[in-house]
Image (cartoon, rainbow over the protein chains, first blue to last red):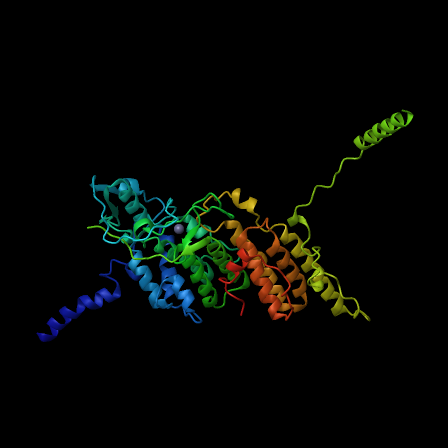
Length: 284
Length: 185
Ligand SMILES: [Zn+2]
């Protein structure tokens, strides 16, 4: 009798470890049905790669820019876990999935930055849907919720963690003679995911770590620059710097692609960039 | 008076001759269209692409093959150089999403990858590659991220071949990116 009770108690734990009761995927990230199967499969495998990455020679300056106490597969996994909860596909339309919870909501975020910034003229350019909807609501004093993956999510923080991916994520990292499942292309996609994850951070005038308008350089006039040393572009550049070293058995073209992507991200940093408080703001 | 008339006539004749000059069919070459190997660099004479013929006595087959490979490599560098993405290319980019790395930038990884493979198999090609990287890093018409990768390669391959490039000037805005980029092992 005791044996039967024992089996009954242990069974759910065993089943959940097999994934049968586990609704969420790796790092508890849930994929919305709008994500095509092949993209979901590739991205799930990309996330699994994080666990196998080894890092060495990480300086304190690098960590400062990454804004993490250490660079390890564990810390990177936790970073994503806290900032990405849902991934939606290109066909996901936030406008039709949006419900107004309160039409005259007084945004009084629990966390607000206490400094003024010369980079306050901001327009967000991102595919971090959760953060974008939160900022849109904050701007118009409307509190929203979003239907995603059969759930209704209250959009009360930049950390809501709903990331939209599209075909561009897979096509823009195309390299001749390098398949989409190669380690180099996985690392390039992951760097984009970490960039978007950083858009889940920040508070006050820097909520969502938005990009600033480039006043000079290659992208002058576009909101494609970085005024924070710990913002999405610089985080991406620093990670790619270490992904390059972790890209074992990658060929020279693949390594060059990682170097070029790091160079592009680093080139977005404007003069006078400063480190900003990355704590996310939330309401309610 | 006579002198004035003669001088005026001479001037008009000269003007007529000038107006009938043959049309200049040679377009003005943009900096990028010049061969990167032709750019004189007094600071590093070895980078001027001059062939050292002093030791070419008793040419053998292996040497001919080496020279052929060198010629092909130089040709590759020249044709690749003019295809490196320019600032104009990003503004015309069909992608249009300037939030992400322009596709033209990632596509040029083929060029950097090919050069690196060649240098690993034949270090004698290093000087030509350095000349390419030097010209690219200095070229203001190219995308900044490309210039920074060229500068990174210039520094790393020169160090590997123990060639002194301390006199080469790399602009400050490029150097700020170079320090972030991973070095070659
Ligand atoms: Zn961004």
